[in-house]
Length: 129
Image (tube, rainbow, N blue to C red; front, top):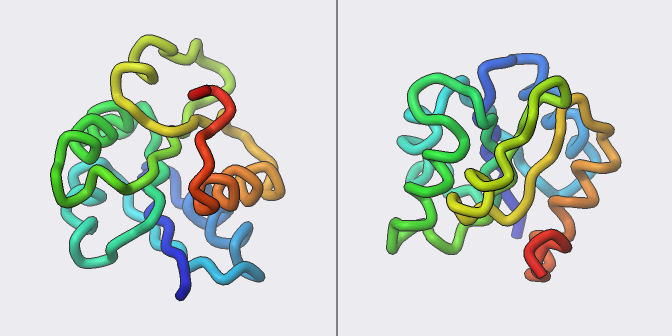
């Protein structure tokens, strides 16, 4: 079965980079531009992993993660937060929103592929041990 990733980021470039990173993997990627749109796609697209920018419109990545994790029908979905390397990452917000992992932009394709494969394997992310 093909795994699915939903990328919620205002940047079409980030959406494209993630799509290209998984081009040769058995993983389908769909990109949306804000958190509300991502929330609305959960039932239709049924992603295994949601990647969400912490600073997007509609719902931030933190808010989207909290909403996913508090929802009975979606709480099993894994969440990776995306943040800019140029801004301080809100570690407290990260812990509070129950996301499995986070990644700083810009990121390397092999780094994001490794994180996704790790989460799809069912293992706990290293920073959550």
